[in-house]
Amino acid sequence: MQPEIRVTADGPYEVVGLPIGRTHQIETEYGEPIDWAPVEPIPTDDEVVRLCRCGASSTKPICDDSCETADWDPVLTADRRPLAERARRFVGTGLAITDDHSLCTHAGYCGDRFTTVWRMLSETDDPEIRARVQGMVDRCPSGTIAWAPSRDADEVEPVFEPSVAISNDGPIWVRGGVPVTGPDGEAYEIRNRQTLCRCGYSRNKPFCDGSHKVVRFTDP
Image 1: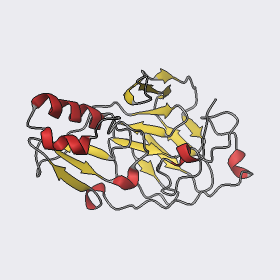
Image 2: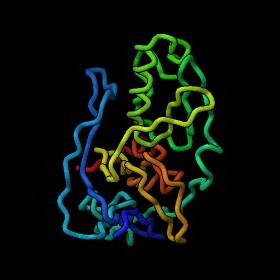
Image 3: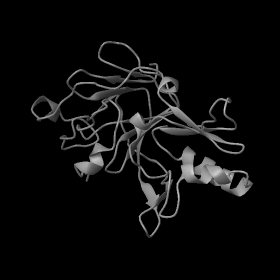
Image 4: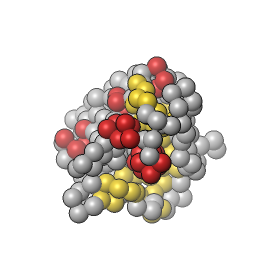
């Protein structure tokens, strides 16, 4: 079967032909995310795996049909336009950053207690700072931010095999250019990095907007 993720109208995500695992953010003693933990596979024998998107399943991340009785809004509201039509571009020396903030999950890799990638753009004539910015941008799970070597160049993306990683107490991290299709059969723009809401509260469904942090979503 061709790998894809299907968003059902009033229920779960249907994940087809993709490995699924769990990961979590690695943080400093100050709670600053600096990396991702290796993905631990979730064994499954099903060709189609149903992942919860209402946030109420008792078998997270797997759907247990709680979506049929839970008080949640399944309506999909995300802008279907290409990211390039929404993103802003910030230019430094030897580096440019694109930013489509509508996709931000507030994962926190874009800054620390001292600075942010946007502030560091003014210092990217220094190769070490430029490399640091690139690394921070590459760890953004949603692709909200990406980097390019110049104002007019294409973005350079980290390499991922098509897969799904369940972020601890966070969204579904879809990697490697996996198609995500709505209930109407229309595909969203295929992107290398995407994050899908699984708390049920995003205002940008099917994508995560960081609402899981506000509602203190947990996945024991």
